[in-house]
Amino acid sequence: MARIYVQNRSIVVPGDLLAEGEDVVVESIFVERVGLKYYATITGLANVQQEDGKFKVSIIPLEGAYIPRPGDIVIGLVRDIGLTHWEVDIASPYKGILTVQEVLDRPFNPATDSLKKYLDVGDYIVAKIVAFDRARDPLLTIKGKGLGRIVEGSIVEIKPSRVPRVIGKKGSMVNMIMQETGCEVLVGQNGRILVKCPNRELEEIVVLSIKKIEAEAHTTGLTERVREFIRRERSRRGV
Image (tube, rainbow, N blue to C red; front, side, top):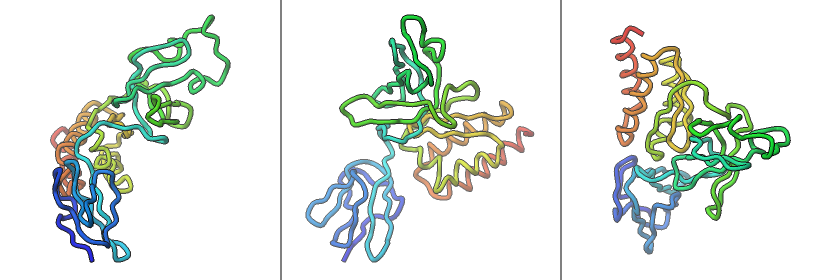
């Protein structure tokens, strides 16, 4: 029989006893098992769910760097250009590598052509992680719908650990923000967010809303508070 010592979505710190017993399923690398006792190894939000008579325990980290995963959509900043590839800052301990084959659909000759014509240092891009195994830097692509160089909008940066709260369950939070403002919001898994709005006032409201989510990620009832904040700001600003 399982015993749970923390409430769902409560804050835990390293060493906190989370659960005890045989009917416990751990779904996090941030939980350490000692015998039949389970302890937190990081600061985060406890996630406790009961299913099929068992308790599933995991931790949502409140801090930490972005670690790439294949399939992730990220927003990157071009930092350097080689002969046949770009080096991209993806807000991670690892730099992204974007090869010319993942940009162009035709042969490329570095002797007669320059990568600067396509992407230059300082450009932001929406990219997908193609491969990453920690033995080499992650490989990126900008081939695909919605990917490529960013030509308009603003970039907001938050802690990568707050990304799930900005997205919300099944996209509930980010969809609410877009519905309430008429803006486009693309959330990169690396904590960079692209905001495109009809005007500057709405853009500022969206940015403030995202920062509010980041600051209050550990609280409950956040979606409705953000909705009220957006409506209040729109009314105050007359937009």
